[in-house]
Image (cartoon, rainbow, N blue to C red; front, side, top):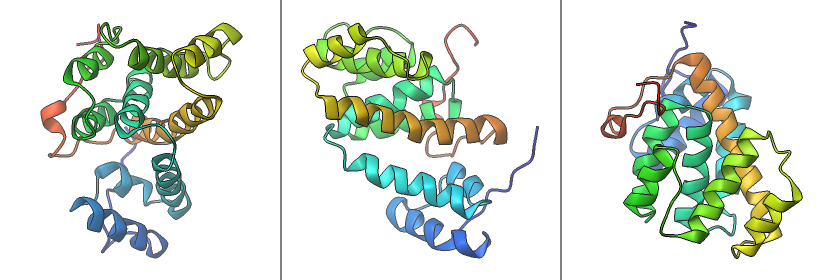
Length: 187
């Protein structure tokens, strides 16, 4: 295990402090992953900037969290699955859809959300090299070419945090511990 510091807005490297202060103002605390990313002001700024850009995507809030949760499940990131479970609930993603994603199963009663889950999953698993049929199925479900690119953006965002969490072994924040997660078949 490589020990990473979990900084806050008072003890982080100087260039990271404004980003952590912004996070604390928005969330009431600094999530552990941001505290670790603060070791590199560039990495922290990159993550927070990508987050702000992804928020502007045309996907609705529940769909955005479905993308982030699905990517985190596929990358087996315990930290982000716990965090995005709670955030997805708050964004209005139905509980049964959240549980299906966490269990790496189909969302059976919502074809549109299932198409988004499956397309996101394939983007991660195939490292972006999805086939034409996969894109066509996603578009046929009512999504757009812009949404294709927005899913890629969300996967890029989660790749940064998921990989950071794997290397740093980020402890799950107390506020997310209720949504603790173990990858299916590994518990």
